[in-house]
Length: 433
Ligand code: EPZ
Image (cartoon, rainbow, N blue to C red; front, top):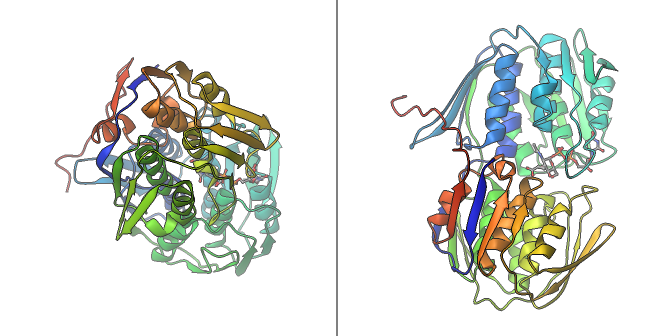
């Protein structure tokens, strides 16, 4: 199992280029199920979850080409015939976003057999709202042996109000509605940029969608969708993570190739803490002379402060003077990083959904263990400022959502190296057109 060894104390200087958004690439790859023609996606991040999605689509009979040359990260997917519309537990248990194939499979083939995604470190992660919406569209869904079995001759348009705002729930049902008979009106939708990016692809495929990115989305079903080419938006959470890396290390770091408008809640909070943020086009430059003031955060759905940045912000808050109250409103168990940060010397107390961070505390290196994707990112950030060499175990969590994070950080002066079994090499398509 790979580990990172990171020696703290180096202010990060220079520029880091942002990869494509994992949480947009995953639904966009699932959208290929909706047509028998080819879908070509550019700016695909080279992360483990994308490989998992490739395996999942291929297991159902899709032809999937995935290549990471220097010039491009792209995939070409053709679901000409889906011989086996089943999302097997062996794959689903490693990535719960596999539930994103549920809606497209029912819409395209009239049936789907999808393993119930288990919970994960951050919470139970139910998909009851996906199921409720599909049932409203006429799908018959039964649960047996850990699998969802869904059938529908043809989905019909419906009026759906989400009881809770759900990102993949909005995406799953939006995809299902594109081929339904009639109009679907969805209220209380997620407004994340990844929802709008998926809608842009679906529209390029011939779907009729209005309101993506707002709470109300209206979809007119069509008979069929055709192939399309689409470029995935930059990853706002990767960008936010590196902004905090620049701030926590007291450096001068530019994040390039991002969409600053997707990060407003994060940059505003960094400025409140005393970090200077300069936005110019697709770059954000952060500088901090190390003097930071504590500030509270409360995670909310977009455009509020993102839950996927909570753990990273907590690492920064340990280096700020005063008290920072960190409240996690989206997931019920997303403080797995707290104990590891405390072992490095942080002063954090958890009471229900709120963690109280008292700073500034010196962090010292320790052997720590990653538990989930963003918790592992927060440990890397803490190690950047800790005295000595920190060993972070189980970095496969971080490889799920960050493209070669050690190379990107080393490129701006971090003393970080990966040890353990070599990360499986990706096939590259150097010669590909
Ligand atoms: C997406 O997960 C992201 N994953 C998560 O990113 C992100 O943390 C989350 O949205 C919130 O922004 C992808 O896009 C692949 P939700 P998702 O449905 O869609 C409850 C990362 O780090 N809920 O918006 O699974 C749920 O339990 C990952 O990249 C139901 O109760 O999250 C949670 O409390 C982690 N029933 C809340 O809603 C449902 O049917 C929000 O969950 C669905 C969700």
